[in-house]
Image 1 (cartoon, rainbow, N blue to C red):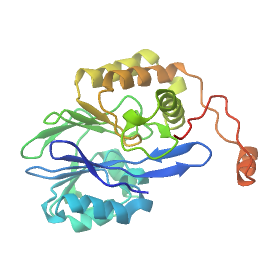
Image 2: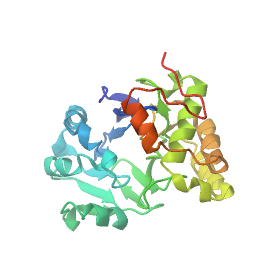
Image 3: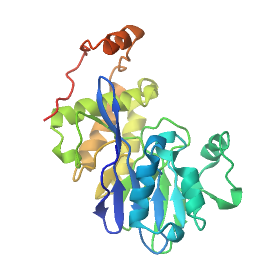
Image 4: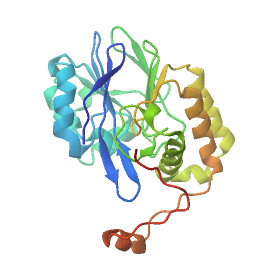
Length: 273
């Protein structure tokens, strides 16, 4: 389901959507639109939400005005409408990197003349702002880069800093703290299974780099937008490598779920309301 887009910073809007994770909760899949001298689409939503994404994005900006499509990585919950958007936005270039470009080329033909490579730490000039691609502390694709906009002081962290929630929320601040933390620990272990192999000090150092940007707002693709929580979120992501692996459902669990039986967990699940 896709919710109505809303403004999060000057000329910056989030398009929230989510899908259910059976037996766990709802997983958000956010995309951004940055208006300005050279408008930017940040990720293109999940394939299943493509029609709703297209309607929402182009209610905010004329597709002929779009100059940049920043793709954090190639997963289909981020690249779901990419080819439609490229067709509808003939004046736009795709900001990606060689790894994502190669993976996308397994399915789609993307003219290299329309591609702009931005590796982690590299920037591109969108006329009234210079944006920087930065790898977040945790990621599930080697192509992943978040996006830092110093003009609005917004950092889009791609998959990192996500959380599972029990019901639809507009703002992450409205999620009860124990539920937010439970969903955060669940998602950031399941989506980044290599956390158990990571050096906690190195992940903490990456979290510190995000903190040192002094972002006014840190937006995950996979969480409802939360204001004034940057320090808390950086502390939480730094703890993920110290946690044990999150057990995943087995075939027996799937059969019980299909039979409508309740699923026990080792940790308390979030509750709606």
